[in-house]
Amino acid sequence: MFYNVGLGGEAEFPYGSLEKVRMARILVAEYVDICARGLADVLAGHQLTFADAHIAHKDVDLALVSTSTPTLEHWSEIAPSVDGVPVIFVTQDHEWFALKTMLDGADVRGIVHMQAPAAEIAAAVDAVLQGEGYFAPSCRACAGKVRRSWLDELGATRREIEVLDRVLRGRTNAAIAREIGCSERTVKFHVSNLLRKAAVRTRRELRDSVGLLNQRLGLVGVPLA
Image (cartoon, rainbow, N blue to C red; front, top):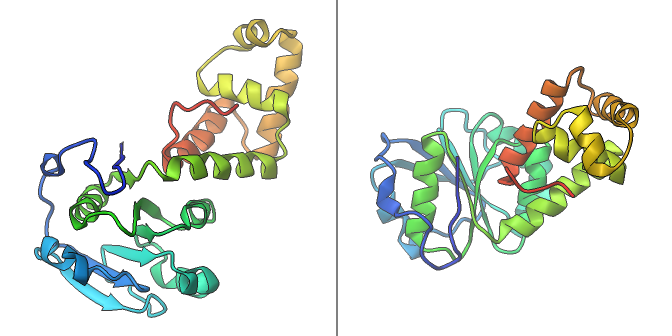
């Protein structure tokens, strides 16, 4: 499940709706200036470590990482330090970078805006610690671009994307053929190409692969085309 919050506004769910999580070890890294905005007080029940993300921190439960310019320039050096650690990116204008790193293997579970109220970031922390995701609406447009970039890298044609969109919705080849106006044999051809390009063997694996991508980007139910 993914929770979405407005920038500087009210959340689409009450902050108190999530159960209080256990005390967690949280790394606050790379220029996340949260003290002045009261986040340290909001997260008083957790153990906070303020440090440069270049330092390996395998003993933390979560990392808050800023997408500031230094982070953008040195991400290849920072990434190994938070490998295997759930990450919440605190971003100003770099949602594209934050989302793209998700496709590159970073365990990004949330993205919040730098100017979001401390309570919103605290809610993101609680959500991620409970295994959920937390994405601000401002990331939606960038998420679509990242998914489009993934499809381009996959080499999917416009027609294949139309077929894939329907495969994700559980349509049969016959149903897809009727909907897009072609023969069932042509649909089978497109599905075969998609399986090859995505390096999977079955329709189920294809649905699971693209479904995971949609989940990580917060785009479940949003059409591909």
